Length: 477
Ligand code: PHE
Image: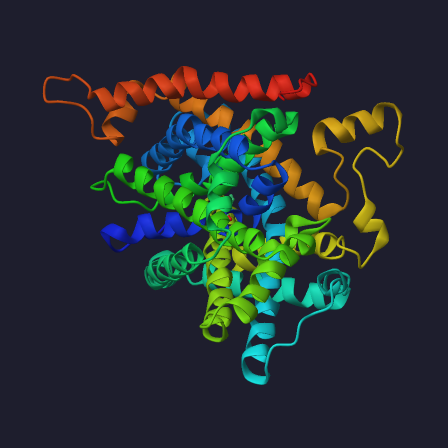
Protein backbone atom coordinates (compact mmCIF):
# COMPACT_ATOMS: atom_id res chain seq x y z
CA UNK A 1 0.00 0.00 0.00
CA UNK A 2 1.34 3.44 -0.93
CA UNK A 3 2.35 5.72 1.92
CA UNK A 4 0.85 9.18 2.40
CA UNK A 5 2.27 11.43 -0.30
CA UNK A 6 5.04 13.75 0.76
CA UNK A 7 4.08 17.45 0.56
CA UNK A 8 5.78 20.81 0.61
CA UNK A 9 5.91 21.76 4.28
CA UNK A 10 5.23 25.46 4.05
CA UNK A 11 3.27 27.96 2.03
CA UNK A 12 6.38 29.17 0.25
CA UNK A 13 7.74 25.65 -0.23
CA UNK A 14 6.15 25.02 -3.58
CA UNK A 15 6.87 28.46 -4.99
CA UNK A 16 10.51 28.28 -3.99
CA UNK A 17 11.06 24.75 -5.24
CA UNK A 18 9.23 25.45 -8.49
CA UNK A 19 11.12 28.68 -9.05
CA UNK A 20 14.26 26.76 -8.18
CA UNK A 21 13.35 24.42 -11.01
CA UNK A 22 12.60 27.29 -13.38
CA UNK A 23 15.57 29.48 -12.54
CA UNK A 24 18.68 27.70 -13.66
CA UNK A 25 21.21 27.48 -16.43
CA UNK A 26 18.41 28.45 -18.78
CA UNK A 27 18.43 31.93 -17.29
CA UNK A 28 22.09 32.39 -16.50
CA UNK A 29 23.81 30.50 -19.29
CA UNK A 30 21.41 29.91 -22.14
CA UNK A 31 19.21 32.98 -22.42
CA UNK A 32 22.08 35.49 -22.52
CA UNK A 33 23.77 33.61 -25.36
CA UNK A 34 20.72 32.80 -27.47
CA UNK A 35 19.45 36.38 -27.11
CA UNK A 36 22.94 37.52 -28.16
CA UNK A 37 23.05 35.18 -31.16
CA UNK A 38 19.58 36.33 -32.18
CA UNK A 39 20.60 40.00 -32.03
CA UNK A 40 18.71 41.00 -28.87
CA UNK A 41 15.66 43.31 -29.03
CA UNK A 42 13.31 41.61 -31.47
CA UNK A 43 14.08 38.18 -30.08
CA UNK A 44 13.54 39.36 -26.51
CA UNK A 45 10.17 40.77 -27.47
CA UNK A 46 9.08 37.53 -29.13
CA UNK A 47 10.34 35.64 -26.10
CA UNK A 48 8.36 37.83 -23.69
CA UNK A 49 5.25 37.31 -25.81
CA UNK A 50 5.78 33.53 -25.64
CA UNK A 51 6.13 33.72 -21.85
CA UNK A 52 2.87 35.61 -21.45
CA UNK A 53 0.74 33.95 -24.10
CA UNK A 54 1.98 30.40 -23.76
CA UNK A 55 4.18 30.07 -20.66
CA UNK A 56 1.83 31.32 -18.01
CA UNK A 57 -1.28 29.37 -19.16
CA UNK A 58 0.72 26.14 -19.59
CA UNK A 59 2.31 26.60 -16.17
CA UNK A 60 -1.14 26.81 -14.60
CA UNK A 61 -2.34 23.81 -16.62
CA UNK A 62 0.52 21.61 -15.47
CA UNK A 63 0.07 22.48 -11.83
CA UNK A 64 -3.68 21.89 -12.07
CA UNK A 65 -3.12 18.44 -13.59
CA UNK A 66 -0.50 17.50 -11.00
CA UNK A 67 -2.34 18.70 -7.95
CA UNK A 68 -5.60 17.17 -9.05
CA UNK A 69 -4.09 13.80 -9.93
CA UNK A 70 -1.71 13.68 -6.91
CA UNK A 71 0.71 11.59 -8.91
CA UNK A 72 3.53 11.84 -11.45
CA UNK A 73 2.92 12.70 -15.12
CA UNK A 74 2.59 9.21 -16.65
CA UNK A 75 -0.09 7.89 -14.29
CA UNK A 76 -1.60 11.39 -13.84
CA UNK A 77 -3.67 11.33 -17.00
CA UNK A 78 -5.11 7.92 -16.15
CA UNK A 79 -5.83 9.08 -12.63
CA UNK A 80 -7.89 11.91 -14.11
CA UNK A 81 -9.84 9.37 -16.18
CA UNK A 82 -7.94 9.59 -19.48
CA UNK A 83 -5.34 6.81 -19.62
CA UNK A 84 -4.88 7.27 -23.37
CA UNK A 85 -3.14 10.57 -22.66
CA UNK A 86 -0.39 8.82 -20.72
CA UNK A 87 1.82 9.20 -23.81
CA UNK A 88 2.17 12.89 -22.90
CA UNK A 89 3.72 11.82 -19.61
CA UNK A 90 6.05 9.42 -21.42
CA UNK A 91 7.08 12.16 -23.82
CA UNK A 92 7.88 14.29 -20.79
CA UNK A 93 9.98 11.56 -19.21
CA UNK A 94 11.92 11.23 -22.47
CA UNK A 95 12.49 15.00 -22.56
CA UNK A 96 13.61 14.94 -18.93
CA UNK A 97 16.16 12.22 -19.64
CA UNK A 98 17.45 14.08 -22.67
CA UNK A 99 17.68 17.45 -20.92
CA UNK A 100 19.26 16.15 -17.74
CA UNK A 101 21.91 14.27 -19.70
CA UNK A 102 23.35 17.44 -21.21
CA UNK A 103 22.37 19.81 -18.39
CA UNK A 104 24.62 17.98 -15.94
CA UNK A 105 27.60 18.53 -18.23
CA UNK A 106 27.14 22.30 -18.22
CA UNK A 107 26.26 22.36 -14.54
CA UNK A 108 29.59 20.61 -13.96
CA UNK A 109 31.40 23.63 -15.39
CA UNK A 110 30.16 25.70 -12.46
CA UNK A 111 32.19 23.44 -10.18
CA UNK A 112 35.36 24.04 -12.15
CA UNK A 113 34.68 27.80 -12.44
CA UNK A 114 34.27 27.89 -8.71
CA UNK A 115 37.59 26.13 -8.17
CA UNK A 116 39.26 28.44 -10.68
CA UNK A 117 37.89 31.51 -8.88
CA UNK A 118 39.11 30.27 -5.52
CA UNK A 119 42.57 29.82 -7.01
CA UNK A 120 42.51 33.34 -8.41
CA UNK A 121 41.21 34.80 -5.17
CA UNK A 122 43.92 33.12 -3.16
CA UNK A 123 46.97 33.40 -5.36
CA UNK A 124 46.14 36.31 -7.64
CA UNK A 125 44.50 36.60 -11.04
CA UNK A 126 46.38 35.45 -14.08
CA UNK A 127 44.60 36.01 -17.37
CA UNK A 128 43.74 32.75 -19.15
CA UNK A 129 44.81 32.16 -22.74
CA UNK A 130 42.22 32.93 -25.40
CA UNK A 131 41.48 29.29 -26.14
CA UNK A 132 41.57 28.17 -22.50
CA UNK A 133 37.86 27.35 -22.46
CA UNK A 134 38.09 25.25 -25.62
CA UNK A 135 40.98 23.29 -24.15
CA UNK A 136 39.01 22.75 -20.95
CA UNK A 137 36.01 21.46 -22.94
CA UNK A 138 38.16 19.00 -24.84
CA UNK A 139 39.45 17.32 -21.67
CA UNK A 140 37.32 14.18 -21.76
CA UNK A 141 38.11 12.64 -18.37
CA UNK A 142 37.70 15.99 -16.60
CA UNK A 143 34.34 16.60 -18.30
CA UNK A 144 33.18 13.13 -17.31
CA UNK A 145 34.34 13.64 -13.75
CA UNK A 146 32.53 16.99 -13.38
CA UNK A 147 29.36 15.61 -14.95
CA UNK A 148 29.41 12.53 -12.74
CA UNK A 149 29.95 14.68 -9.66
CA UNK A 150 26.98 16.86 -10.46
CA UNK A 151 24.78 13.88 -11.21
CA UNK A 152 25.81 12.24 -7.94
CA UNK A 153 24.95 15.34 -5.88
CA UNK A 154 21.59 15.60 -7.64
CA UNK A 155 20.86 11.93 -7.02
CA UNK A 156 21.83 12.19 -3.39
CA UNK A 157 19.35 15.01 -2.75
CA UNK A 158 16.53 13.43 -4.75
CA UNK A 159 17.00 10.16 -2.89
CA UNK A 160 16.25 12.02 0.34
CA UNK A 161 12.73 13.00 -0.67
CA UNK A 162 10.68 16.14 -1.07
CA UNK A 163 10.03 18.24 1.99
CA UNK A 164 13.27 17.73 3.93
CA UNK A 165 15.98 18.31 1.34
CA UNK A 166 14.69 20.26 -1.67
CA UNK A 167 12.51 22.64 0.26
CA UNK A 168 15.05 23.52 2.93
CA UNK A 169 17.78 24.09 0.40
CA UNK A 170 15.75 26.28 -1.97
CA UNK A 171 14.57 28.42 0.93
CA UNK A 172 18.10 29.60 1.51
CA UNK A 173 19.34 29.52 -2.06
CA UNK A 174 16.73 31.55 -3.83
CA UNK A 175 16.89 34.69 -1.65
CA UNK A 176 20.70 34.65 -1.74
CA UNK A 177 20.64 34.24 -5.51
CA UNK A 178 18.37 37.26 -5.83
CA UNK A 179 20.59 39.31 -3.54
CA UNK A 180 23.72 38.61 -5.57
CA UNK A 181 21.92 39.33 -8.84
CA UNK A 182 20.81 42.72 -7.52
CA UNK A 183 24.35 43.52 -6.45
CA UNK A 184 25.69 42.65 -9.89
CA UNK A 185 23.02 44.71 -11.67
CA UNK A 186 23.87 47.68 -9.45
CA UNK A 187 27.51 47.25 -10.38
CA UNK A 188 26.53 47.28 -14.08
CA UNK A 189 24.78 50.63 -13.77
CA UNK A 190 28.14 52.24 -13.01
CA UNK A 191 29.81 50.84 -16.13
CA UNK A 192 29.96 52.66 -19.48
CA UNK A 193 28.29 49.89 -21.51
CA UNK A 194 25.08 49.83 -19.44
CA UNK A 195 23.09 52.04 -21.82
CA UNK A 196 24.15 50.10 -24.87
CA UNK A 197 23.29 46.83 -23.15
CA UNK A 198 19.77 48.09 -22.47
CA UNK A 199 19.42 49.26 -26.06
CA UNK A 200 20.59 45.91 -27.38
CA UNK A 201 18.07 44.12 -25.16
CA UNK A 202 15.04 46.33 -25.44
CA UNK A 203 15.29 48.07 -28.81
CA UNK A 204 13.77 45.63 -31.33
CA UNK A 205 15.09 45.49 -34.87
CA UNK A 206 13.06 42.93 -36.79
CA UNK A 207 15.23 43.18 -39.91
CA UNK A 208 17.82 41.04 -38.11
CA UNK A 209 15.36 38.39 -36.98
CA UNK A 210 15.72 34.87 -38.40
CA UNK A 211 13.40 31.93 -38.91
CA UNK A 212 14.73 29.74 -36.15
CA UNK A 213 14.53 32.68 -33.77
CA UNK A 214 10.81 32.36 -33.22
CA UNK A 215 10.97 28.63 -32.53
CA UNK A 216 13.96 29.22 -30.31
CA UNK A 217 12.06 31.89 -28.36
CA UNK A 218 9.11 29.56 -27.89
CA UNK A 219 11.37 26.63 -27.06
CA UNK A 220 13.25 28.69 -24.55
CA UNK A 221 10.02 29.88 -22.91
CA UNK A 222 9.24 26.22 -22.23
CA UNK A 223 12.76 25.35 -21.19
CA UNK A 224 13.25 28.23 -18.79
CA UNK A 225 9.89 27.72 -17.09
CA UNK A 226 10.46 23.93 -16.89
CA UNK A 227 7.31 23.33 -18.93
CA UNK A 228 6.19 20.74 -21.45
CA UNK A 229 7.76 17.74 -19.73
CA UNK A 230 5.84 17.29 -16.52
CA UNK A 231 8.22 18.87 -14.00
CA UNK A 232 5.45 21.19 -12.84
CA UNK A 233 2.93 18.34 -12.92
CA UNK A 234 5.23 16.43 -10.59
CA UNK A 235 5.90 19.36 -8.25
CA UNK A 236 2.21 20.30 -8.35
CA UNK A 237 1.36 16.82 -7.12
CA UNK A 238 3.08 17.64 -3.83
CA UNK A 239 1.22 20.95 -3.44
CA UNK A 240 -1.37 21.58 -0.76
CA UNK A 241 -4.96 22.17 -1.82
CA UNK A 242 -5.11 25.38 0.17
CA UNK A 243 -2.59 27.22 -2.00
CA UNK A 244 -3.39 29.42 -4.97
CA UNK A 245 -2.14 28.03 -8.27
CA UNK A 246 -2.63 31.36 -10.04
CA UNK A 247 -0.57 33.38 -7.59
CA UNK A 248 2.17 30.76 -7.43
CA UNK A 249 2.38 30.60 -11.23
CA UNK A 250 2.55 34.38 -11.55
CA UNK A 251 5.35 34.54 -8.98
CA UNK A 252 7.38 31.82 -10.68
CA UNK A 253 6.98 33.31 -14.16
CA UNK A 254 7.83 36.83 -12.96
CA UNK A 255 10.90 35.74 -11.01
CA UNK A 256 12.19 33.63 -13.85
CA UNK A 257 11.80 36.44 -16.39
CA UNK A 258 13.39 39.08 -14.20
CA UNK A 259 16.40 36.87 -13.50
CA UNK A 260 16.91 36.05 -17.19
CA UNK A 261 16.81 39.72 -18.16
CA UNK A 262 19.07 40.69 -15.27
CA UNK A 263 21.61 38.07 -16.35
CA UNK A 264 21.63 39.65 -19.82
CA UNK A 265 22.03 43.14 -18.45
CA UNK A 266 24.99 42.02 -16.35
CA UNK A 267 26.78 40.19 -19.15
CA UNK A 268 26.04 42.58 -22.01
CA UNK A 269 27.14 45.55 -19.93
CA UNK A 270 30.53 43.93 -19.50
CA UNK A 271 30.74 43.11 -23.19
CA UNK A 272 29.88 46.64 -24.27
CA UNK A 273 32.02 48.30 -21.61
CA UNK A 274 35.21 46.47 -22.50
CA UNK A 275 35.73 46.01 -26.22
CA UNK A 276 38.35 43.33 -25.64
CA UNK A 277 35.59 41.19 -24.10
CA UNK A 278 33.60 41.34 -27.30
CA UNK A 279 36.39 39.74 -29.27
CA UNK A 280 36.54 37.03 -26.59
CA UNK A 281 33.00 35.98 -27.36
CA UNK A 282 34.13 35.44 -30.93
CA UNK A 283 32.91 32.23 -32.46
CA UNK A 284 31.05 30.89 -29.51
CA UNK A 285 28.85 32.96 -27.26
CA UNK A 286 28.00 29.78 -25.35
CA UNK A 287 30.82 30.39 -22.92
CA UNK A 288 29.65 33.85 -21.86
CA UNK A 289 28.78 32.77 -18.33
CA UNK A 290 31.97 30.79 -17.90
CA UNK A 291 34.46 32.91 -19.85
CA UNK A 292 33.40 36.57 -19.94
CA UNK A 293 32.06 36.83 -16.45
CA UNK A 294 34.94 35.36 -14.45
CA UNK A 295 37.33 37.78 -16.15
CA UNK A 296 35.10 40.67 -15.22
CA UNK A 297 35.11 39.68 -11.58
CA UNK A 298 38.87 39.80 -11.36
CA UNK A 299 39.69 42.70 -13.65
CA UNK A 300 36.78 45.11 -13.36
CA UNK A 301 35.24 44.71 -9.94
CA UNK A 302 36.66 45.68 -6.61
CA UNK A 303 34.69 43.03 -4.75
CA UNK A 304 35.31 40.46 -7.45
CA UNK A 305 37.70 38.43 -5.36
CA UNK A 306 34.81 37.72 -3.05
CA UNK A 307 31.93 37.72 -5.49
CA UNK A 308 33.64 35.45 -8.02
CA UNK A 309 33.58 32.26 -5.99
CA UNK A 310 30.24 33.12 -4.39
CA UNK A 311 28.68 33.68 -7.78
CA UNK A 312 29.71 30.25 -9.07
CA UNK A 313 28.35 28.58 -5.98
CA UNK A 314 25.07 30.25 -6.84
CA UNK A 315 25.26 29.14 -10.46
CA UNK A 316 25.85 25.61 -9.18
CA UNK A 317 22.89 25.85 -6.80
CA UNK A 318 20.61 27.37 -9.42
CA UNK A 319 21.56 24.48 -11.69
CA UNK A 320 21.14 21.98 -8.87
CA UNK A 321 17.60 23.03 -8.02
CA UNK A 322 16.81 22.44 -11.72
CA UNK A 323 18.58 19.09 -12.08
CA UNK A 324 16.76 17.93 -8.96
CA UNK A 325 13.42 18.63 -10.63
CA UNK A 326 14.49 16.92 -13.84
CA UNK A 327 15.56 13.78 -12.04
CA UNK A 328 12.49 13.90 -9.80
CA UNK A 329 10.23 13.48 -12.84
CA UNK A 330 11.88 10.18 -13.73
CA UNK A 331 12.23 9.01 -10.13
CA UNK A 332 8.60 9.84 -9.28
CA UNK A 333 7.55 7.70 -12.23
CA UNK A 334 9.47 4.67 -10.93
CA UNK A 335 8.18 5.24 -7.39
CA UNK A 336 4.55 5.77 -8.41
CA UNK A 337 4.32 3.23 -11.19
CA UNK A 338 6.62 0.40 -10.15
CA UNK A 339 6.41 0.95 -6.40
CA UNK A 340 10.18 0.91 -6.11
CA UNK A 341 11.79 2.59 -3.14
CA UNK A 342 13.00 6.13 -3.68
CA UNK A 343 16.63 5.12 -3.23
CA UNK A 344 16.46 2.32 -5.77
CA UNK A 345 14.52 4.50 -8.24
CA UNK A 346 17.06 7.28 -7.92
CA UNK A 347 20.03 4.98 -8.40
CA UNK A 348 18.55 3.37 -11.51
CA UNK A 349 17.30 6.63 -13.06
CA UNK A 350 20.50 8.59 -12.51
CA UNK A 351 22.69 5.74 -13.75
CA UNK A 352 20.59 5.37 -16.87
CA UNK A 353 20.70 9.09 -17.62
CA UNK A 354 24.42 9.29 -16.95
CA UNK A 355 24.94 6.83 -19.79
CA UNK A 356 23.62 9.50 -22.19
CA UNK A 357 25.63 12.19 -20.40
CA UNK A 358 28.80 10.42 -21.44
CA UNK A 359 28.07 11.16 -25.10
CA UNK A 360 27.29 14.80 -24.29
CA UNK A 361 30.34 15.30 -22.10
CA UNK A 362 32.63 14.03 -24.85
CA UNK A 363 30.92 16.04 -27.59
CA UNK A 364 32.75 19.32 -26.98
CA UNK A 365 36.05 18.36 -28.47
CA UNK A 366 37.13 15.29 -26.49
CA UNK A 367 35.80 12.87 -29.11
CA UNK A 368 35.69 14.13 -32.67
CA UNK A 369 33.01 11.60 -33.56
CA UNK A 370 30.74 12.74 -30.72
CA UNK A 371 31.54 16.41 -31.40
CA UNK A 372 30.60 16.37 -35.07
CA UNK A 373 27.76 13.87 -34.85
CA UNK A 374 24.67 14.86 -36.82
CA UNK A 375 21.46 12.93 -36.53
CA UNK A 376 20.75 12.69 -40.24
CA UNK A 377 24.36 12.22 -41.37
CA UNK A 378 27.11 14.68 -42.15
CA UNK A 379 26.53 15.09 -45.88
CA UNK A 380 26.15 18.72 -46.98
CA UNK A 381 23.47 18.01 -49.53
CA UNK A 382 20.36 15.90 -49.95
CA UNK A 383 17.55 14.95 -47.63
CA UNK A 384 19.78 14.36 -44.59
CA UNK A 385 21.22 17.85 -44.82
CA UNK A 386 17.75 19.35 -45.21
CA UNK A 387 16.47 17.46 -42.16
CA UNK A 388 19.53 18.46 -40.11
CA UNK A 389 18.80 22.03 -41.00
CA UNK A 390 15.08 21.89 -40.30
CA UNK A 391 15.14 19.97 -37.04
CA UNK A 392 18.55 20.73 -35.61
CA UNK A 393 19.39 24.14 -37.15
CA UNK A 394 22.59 22.52 -38.50
CA UNK A 395 23.96 21.97 -35.02
CA UNK A 396 26.59 19.29 -34.45
CA UNK A 397 27.59 17.10 -31.53
CA UNK A 398 25.45 15.31 -28.95
CA UNK A 399 25.19 18.13 -26.43
CA UNK A 400 24.08 20.71 -28.99
CA UNK A 401 21.69 18.26 -30.64
CA UNK A 402 20.08 17.14 -27.38
CA UNK A 403 19.75 20.74 -26.29
CA UNK A 404 18.24 21.94 -29.53
CA UNK A 405 15.90 19.02 -30.06
CA UNK A 406 14.55 18.78 -26.52
CA UNK A 407 13.96 22.51 -26.08
CA UNK A 408 12.77 23.41 -29.56
CA UNK A 409 10.74 20.34 -30.42
CA UNK A 410 9.97 18.03 -27.53
CA UNK A 411 8.96 20.67 -24.97
CA UNK A 412 6.71 22.68 -27.34
CA UNK A 413 5.05 19.46 -28.57
CA UNK A 414 4.62 18.23 -24.99
CA UNK A 415 3.26 21.65 -24.03
CA UNK A 416 0.84 21.59 -26.94
CA UNK A 417 -0.69 18.32 -25.73
CA UNK A 418 -0.81 19.58 -22.15
CA UNK A 419 -2.76 22.70 -23.16
CA UNK A 420 -5.11 20.65 -25.32
CA UNK A 421 -5.71 18.31 -22.40
CA UNK A 422 -6.25 21.09 -19.88
CA UNK A 423 -8.42 23.11 -22.24
CA UNK A 424 -10.53 20.50 -23.98
CA UNK A 425 -10.38 17.22 -22.08
CA UNK A 426 -10.27 18.14 -18.42
CA UNK A 427 -13.70 19.34 -17.31
CA UNK A 428 -14.24 23.04 -16.68
CA UNK A 429 -15.49 22.17 -13.25
CA UNK A 430 -12.27 20.41 -12.30
CA UNK A 431 -9.97 23.20 -13.42
CA UNK A 432 -12.18 25.93 -11.95
CA UNK A 433 -12.14 24.08 -8.63
CA UNK A 434 -8.37 23.66 -8.66
CA UNK A 435 -7.94 27.35 -9.45
CA UNK A 436 -10.47 28.10 -6.73
CA UNK A 437 -12.47 30.31 -9.05
CA UNK A 438 -16.05 29.14 -8.69
CA UNK A 439 -18.43 31.44 -6.87
CA UNK A 440 -21.13 30.17 -4.49
CA UNK A 441 -23.66 30.50 -7.34
CA UNK A 442 -21.54 28.35 -9.63
CA UNK A 443 -20.32 31.26 -11.75
CA UNK A 444 -16.64 31.43 -12.64
CA UNK A 445 -14.17 34.27 -12.11
CA UNK A 446 -13.05 36.31 -15.13
CA UNK A 447 -9.46 35.22 -14.59
CA UNK A 448 -10.60 31.64 -15.01
CA UNK A 449 -12.42 32.44 -18.24
CA UNK A 450 -9.39 34.27 -19.58
CA UNK A 451 -7.15 31.36 -18.68
CA UNK A 452 -9.53 28.93 -20.39
CA UNK A 453 -9.60 31.06 -23.52
CA UNK A 454 -5.80 31.08 -23.66
CA UNK A 455 -5.52 27.38 -22.96
CA UNK A 456 -8.19 26.43 -25.47
CA UNK A 457 -7.34 28.73 -28.34
CA UNK A 458 -4.43 31.12 -28.04
CA UNK A 459 -1.71 28.81 -26.69
CA UNK A 460 -2.41 25.72 -28.85
CA UNK A 461 -2.88 27.77 -32.00
CA UNK A 462 0.27 29.75 -31.28
CA UNK A 463 2.40 26.69 -30.57
CA UNK A 464 0.87 24.73 -33.46
CA UNK A 465 1.34 27.59 -35.88
CA UNK A 466 5.01 28.05 -35.04
CA UNK A 467 5.73 24.33 -35.24
CA UNK A 468 4.00 23.97 -38.61
CA UNK A 469 5.62 27.06 -40.11
CA UNK A 470 9.08 25.97 -39.04
CA UNK A 471 8.54 22.46 -40.41
CA UNK A 472 7.45 24.00 -43.71
CA UNK A 473 10.63 26.06 -43.82
CA UNK A 474 9.09 29.46 -43.22
CA UNK A 475 11.53 32.31 -42.85
CA UNK A 476 10.27 34.64 -40.11
CA UNK A 477 12.65 37.50 -40.81
N1 PHE B 1 14.11 25.58 -16.22
C1 PHE B 1 15.43 25.09 -16.08
C2 PHE B 1 16.40 26.22 -16.45
O1 PHE B 1 16.01 27.26 -16.87
C3 PHE B 1 15.67 23.88 -16.93
C4 PHE B 1 14.64 22.83 -16.79
C5 PHE B 1 13.89 22.44 -17.90
C6 PHE B 1 14.38 22.23 -15.56
C7 PHE B 1 12.89 21.50 -17.80
C8 PHE B 1 13.38 21.30 -15.46
C9 PHE B 1 12.64 20.94 -16.55
O2 PHE B 1 17.58 26.06 -16.32
